[in-house]
Length: 199
Image (cartoon, rainbow, N blue to C red; front, side, top):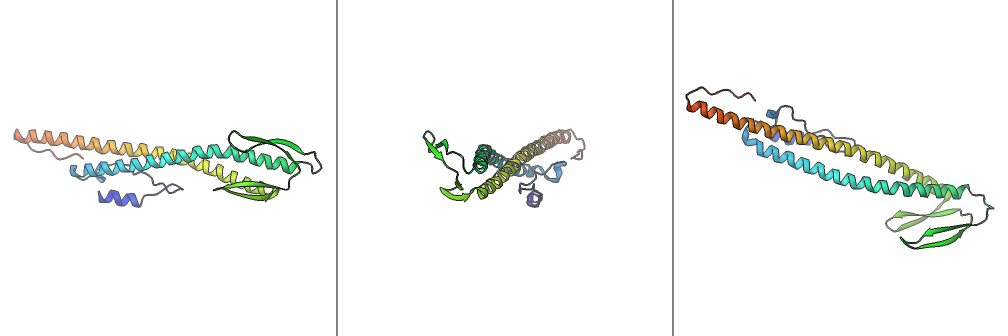
């Protein structure tokens, strides 16, 4: 079992640092005797729980990004629209949101700057070109994060499946060993020779 923990610490990871699940091809590499089975199964179950926790967090992050990206896209489009306007154009009448259910009308001249929420109740003024660059960078970063989240979710699902298969293999090996012990016990009672373990 010490070998399992050691190999877990040295396990390779995906680009975001999520470790690969160990693939149990030969159960006896993880379990030398039946006494080790309970500890190994407990260790595997803990790993499955950790993967499921990471999966839930990644799904929440993915949902947040799916909400956030359209907002950034709308803001980029608005800044681009303001930049493209003729400086001598008539004031633009628009409706803007003050709160979830509260809107106000405004006449927008030809602005040279916009105010952007940066988060944590912080708003800063940016010249239109700088605002567009900043928003484009944020949009690119959000799309990259979205792609990473989708990759991580696929990866986590694979690792959970791998761990479930590993758990089933160890459990089935244990059942097989119990049957052998029962069979060997009966053979011993009948005076027969003890069969060597097949592994």
